[in-house]
Amino acid sequence: MGAGRLGTALTAALGDAGVPVTGPHGRGYTGGGAGIVLLCVPDDAIAAAARAITAERVLVGHCSGASRLDVLGDHEGFSLHPLMTVTRDGADFRGVTAAVAGRTPRALAAARALAGALGLRAVQVADSDRAAYHAAAAIAANFLITVQDAAAELMATAGLDRDVLVPLARAALENWGAAGPAALTGPVARGDTRTVNLHRDAVATRTPDLLALFDALVSATEMLAERDGTRAEVRPAVRNGTLDETVSGDPPASRASETTSP
Image 1 (spheres, helix red, strand yellow):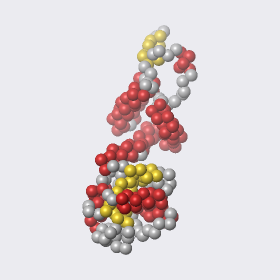
Image 2 (cartoon, helix red, strand yellow):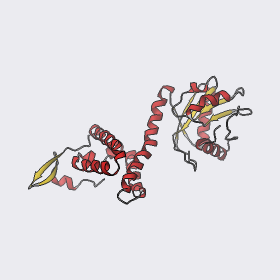
Image 3 (spheres, one colour):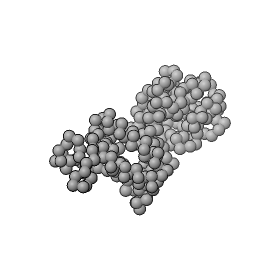
Image 4 (cartoon, one colour):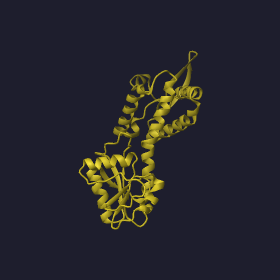
């Protein structure tokens, strides 16, 4: 039930997997003739959609990442949340993690069976952990788009479009996937305060709407670098009337061998 992006994508994927499926259905669907009703509706609409299901012995599930099972009322309920973004073109669910939960063994088994049919890797997430689980997902996916769009907005002031950022962003994400926080590079991680200040001035001048975001990201990146022990201390020094930088504790030769990064 639900003809949005997720409902449409799941209907197609389940059909392709050989699962008998009807829909996606709209408002007023009561679940007649169904063994399972999967609610692919906005979180605020789940409770009302669940109340509309009056068929007996039907399993009712929702696809919300943050919602608990109690939002399904008295139904024998379950949840199935694919940890994947879904666009207007659909999604490939194969190999993706899915958070599942069920009120009864039968409901949980149904959630796992649907996940298996879709090629999803089912993991149980307790109701008490749902908000944290979904917040992490939002940071990883939704906020990532926000940050990339901010970078593209600033890059446009230099006459370049977002395409130039894609290889950089993809490599950074893949490096983080392989190495975690140790993949962090750049002027904040190096403690290069002068460069960070130049960046801040550029943001403040060209895209002032992004300044608060920039400051928050610098602060968060500083904390990450300090926590992971990757941040070097850079002290400004004047040599022969010229401002230079000295990395505390590092000989000049080690600077030359550093990996070049943004």
